[in-house]
Length: 128
Image (tube, rainbow, N blue to C red):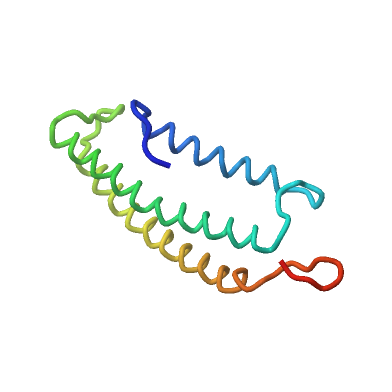
């Protein structure tokens, strides 16, 4: 998906969250129209892995924007606190989040090592 003109970053994040909610609704029941073949599951895991990996960059860019805006004197705190220590705390927390994202990406790739080899069977023994 290429960026659309004049759309705010929060709209893209909302669309990503909505896409996950829609996926969950589509695949929640056994008789739901979601998955038809094991390759569908593999494709979903691949896309989710890509989405998770992109979160690290998106969060880093959001943090960098806050730092630049703070340096320009454009960021305050609603309780009147000094923003600099808050940004240091945010950086520390983002470091932890980044590690978790990397771990999740590795684990999703492990899932794909299994799902990429699964095939569906049509009555009569043919595989899809």
